[in-house]
Amino acid sequence: MGDKGFFCKDGLWYCDKLSLLELREDLGRKYSRPTPVMVYSQQKLIDNLKAYQCCASSSIEIGYSMKANNNLQLLKIIAAHVDRIITVSGYEIQMALRAGFKNESVIYNGNGKERWEIELAIKENCLLNVDSQFDANHIVEAVTKLEKEAKVFVRVNPNLNPEVHPYISTGLADSKFGVEIAQLPEVLSILKHPGVKVVGLHCHLGSTIKSIDIFKDAAIILNKLGTKLRQDGFPNLEYLNLGGGLGIDYTGEDVLPQPSDMISAIRQEVSPEFKIIVEPGRSIVGNAGALLVDVIGTKKNVAKSFVIINGAMNDVLRPSMYSGYHRITPLQVHQSAEMGKYDVVGPICESADFLGKDRMLPALEEGESLAILDCGAYCSAMASNYNLRGRAMEVMVEDYSWRVVRTREGLEDIISCME
Ligand SMILES: Cc1ncc(COP(=O)(O)O)c(C=O)c1O
Image 1 (cartoon, rainbow, N blue to C red):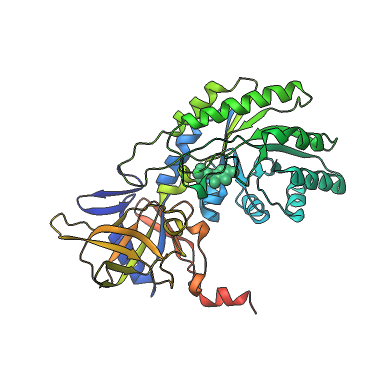
Image 2: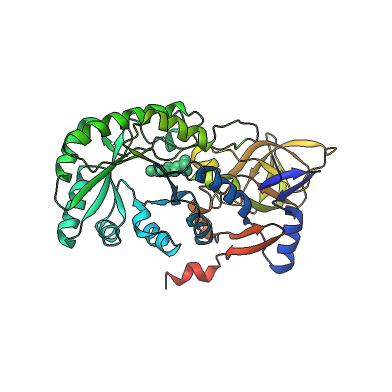
């Protein structure tokens, strides 16, 4: 709670200084289809960035993980506040450059990089994260072909359990990501090439992490490995990248570690000879976005009551994909309203199309609006055209005003690439 971002005051939900009810009415006057609409708080985004920025120093660099949200207008704001950007595809590299990130600030990470993507990263002077033996071979081949040096990190799989949903856990022995510590020597021997400079080690444990102890454990492992490698022929190894993963308070009741807690815990475990990189996504954009939707109708059967809304799993995939939880609220809350238990579901032809289950809500009528909170991360970025639904419009709120940062996708936008 507070008076920035999304909060409820005297029964009315706000985004910064603008009440969501007023925003919804305004959108309704301008557009025949005003919802579903993703609403971003510029102030919250900037505050989240500042919470990281104030930890940055000559030895601590902050990189934003673009996979969490790749909206160009958000990226332009983010570019003004962080040192680096973490990309996971060729298009993300190009988008990062378009948003104003400096070439050398881009890190290209991924367990399945295609040759054109590797060559693009090298041509553009971006850093690359080596994920496997074949990845190391492909990078060496690209360096030879282009006759151009590549600076690389090696992504290590530390076999640590962040205790999050298995779909967003990335640093365990059975994960597809990174190089097993036992296989590091083979990968490093491939990278001992005159055109390749190993500048760091990387690991990423998973996402929605609630405890900082696991970051300490990872820092200890990387610090030990890095120290050994510096002595064993990799004197340019100057960075330890501990990845992203800090969770956010999706329930409105959780107390989570702050970026400064995480970064100082890592710093304590890393010797001063190394610079540290962290690459948050969710904790920068997650609570800076909410999806506004309208009720299409309600329905009751013998076992359940449903609210059917015009937002769906193609807009917010997290609940169906990995049981992600989002608070759902009317834009105006009446304390005296009688509450009932509902599943909040979308119109998509799948039983997995739900935004929330067993939610206490007042009786709702067609046309009333709801806000699905904390949708800034991994919602718009994972949105799809499933059931031939257009991707939602997105607006950015700044104080009392708003502007469109993504237009609603129409049928012609979708068809144009099939003709
Ligand atoms: C390699 C890597 N870095 C950073 C992140 C960002 O994680 P989060 O959004 O949880 O901070 C991810 C997300 O899964 C990732 O895979």
